[in-house]
Length: 367
Ligand SMILES: *Cc1c(COP(=O)(O)O)cnc(C)c1O
Image (cartoon, rainbow, N blue to C red; front, side, top):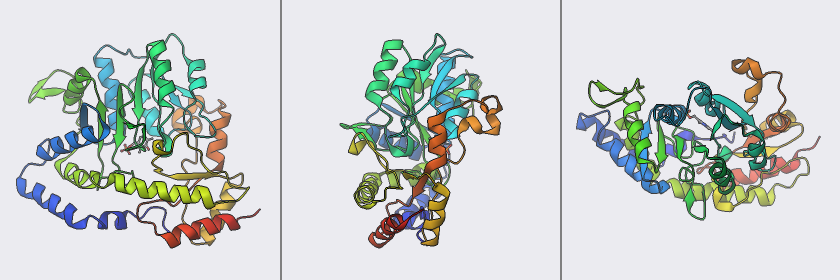
């Protein structure tokens, strides 16, 4: 079986370094908010090109905390509208409703699967205060256009960069376009911890300061609570793991991009639509998604050739029971994507023979 993503083999590459880092933390006697966190935060800020990185417990908390901070800072009020792609992972939307803000779903571009700037403009109302673009599957959303729209309408921009560590346009990376960005280091992400972890990047000192308190019970100083904050911390062990893995991120991204290039060049089947990108470096191929009218049949076919695939994602947010009030709404582009999408194996440890086997099996697919 060619696994979709072999985390064991990915982490085994760095086993000795990870064990050393782990030992260092165990022996330090300091497990929360210490040197390892500070070191990872400055390393990741430098990597993204931002002034600040604030480590938090996971990617969902990263998004929740930024919106919460803007509420505390008086930049947002309950009931304000946040524009978010209709085909995103549910976390982007949960972060909005968790704060008493109103998610407004915006249809994506069928070619890139990312939020469509034209559709953003059509959804702006008096209540719109934030655009929350998601760099889905590892590709930067059209940030030059989105930032121009935000500037024109005086909107804040929160990037959901959970799938796009290191993606860039002319060197300007995911996490360094909007007013702030949320990252996830869930084990399966391009930069993955060995457990849960997340971070926020920003160039706004006031926001960074507010977030430092919000993630820590609303306190800068112990027992002095200025906000009704959360407990959302990135522990020392995970920070140490992430510092090890950050050093290899670009190398791993290059491998992903090479595999993607091969898939794009060699999968040649009129029944399979390959992904498109606007800029080669703007896509770090967190997943490689193809589209097929009879997706379930393609998935079965690949499985019979020993290839594991996944669906990102099977149910669109507006059809989820958690958002019953949207169930009758129609988002045709999103619905088409969810019905036809299939992710084939891509990872830094998949070998040449495996890539060739995937190409071959895709080429053999017929109805
Ligand atoms: C993974 C992911 C998140 C949430 O990250 P967690 O660390 O699992 O909380 C948010 N948004 C997107 C687009 C994601 O892929």
